[in-house]
Image 1: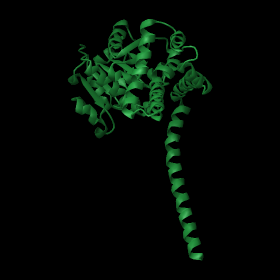
Image 2: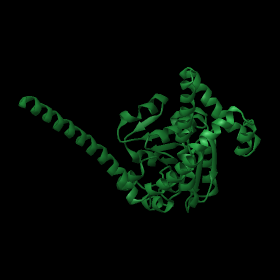
Image 3: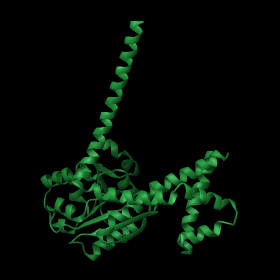
Image 4: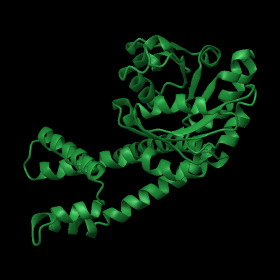
Length: 314
């Protein structure tokens, strides 16, 4: 068990996956954790765990030893500016470790944003949500003032929730498209496998349970045997059998290329998110949703008026 005080600035899904995972694994106790967010009602699941919450980010920085930065990339700048305005410098600042999970935001920008902290120790990482069940996959890179002891401490936390690897920062975006986004791709595959069984008459719950076990079993077989997936696939495909017919359908549907494209585009998007352009795209996406909703209402209104006009003319 670690005796560190762990803080989270932002209490969303990724923060909760890390925090709840550490608590459930017994790495830390609930009274060692403090989580901040703009509205306390959104932090209820943390309080259900017995974790203290606050809407003051500076409390997290002032009181905690290791601080996970878990806000959205486009929130980083205003968040850091608020912390800078209200920060009370302390001799303890030089021992604090900051860990960013912000997709696409590089160490240089992170260190610039938090430059008001003396001897800033910044680690950039990309975890994934299966950390909440101790099956996560995390890569991380360290900033200029991080020492071996800091890395060991963070590695213990991240590695206790699955596997963790220290890599050059130049690889993080590429790996993020696989490890960070990959769970969503696999969930889609699991759902599709279950749907295929349901189509053939298998009850939904049974189909989902079997699909999950198929993916879990296949993954463990690759991990334990060390064999290449292609070799393991060939071992299942009997000549003229049912499996090779199904594999042929996957090839016709370009499953392999589609998954490769998904990883590639997700990696590029991770890089974009840290840029000013990427931040603007996030804002514009929200604005576009609102605009489309208003436009739809206007179309309905116009159509209703047209129908009313037609009826009155009759």
